[in-house]
Length: 316
Image (cartoon, rainbow, N blue to C red; front, side):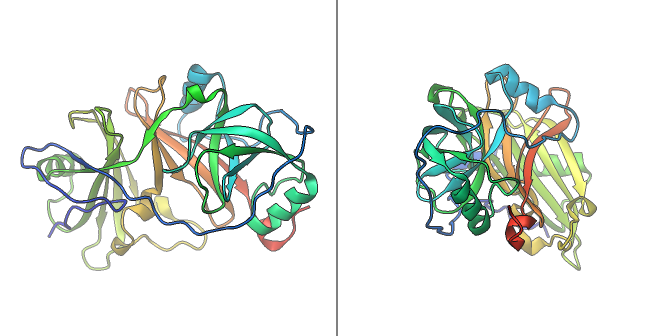
């Protein structure tokens, strides 16, 4: 029997009989509290670009979208409670791409010196690759736990449209997707949809599990236009989720364990919304932006940092 339609991020459920999507507001996931942040004092931060190397599943498509919109590619930065952002570059303002609830702008306030950088690397497992001074920024939202964001430089007027509305897929829409995926209309399955309210394209998320074991068989992400029509889709089998220390995803884990989506952004130069996802692994912490190209190819742009040295106390 088809598993009941469910809410991915804690939103309310609703249904309609005409195959349309009903929007409802998502709940922001709870976060753990970390108490430390640092105010910097003055000027000695290197303003060269961050040295993480981006990779793409298919091409340099998303990097080029950002260059068309803002003249640069996203880089990695770190959030610390209660309202600080740290980066390896100093600029008057940053435009921030983070999880739901994170403000989209940050203002430069000072410098974190090398000694404090070293302490933070050990205590918070951030910026582990060196101990050079970091630029400190004030961000306009409360930060409850240490985490990572992407950023580009520029005034706050460049802030992107963002949000993570949980959408309800009506039964007729689900049946159409099952036909496209060649899935049976029964068995252990999960279906949900996310996007930004206001007539934008959106994404639906799907998973099919073994009826006996509950192990994942296949997952799918589907791009829809604002009317619900399918524009593109991509599938992954269970092997795509394999990693050191990972088991086979289970039905009980839910869709959030498969897709790990943190926010949705609309970029003026992008034909479809961008999904921001957690791309962390056992040894690294990172973020990924994903979308589809106009010809239906799924592409991503990811940045990560190796944190084992921090965790083991081997940072410089």
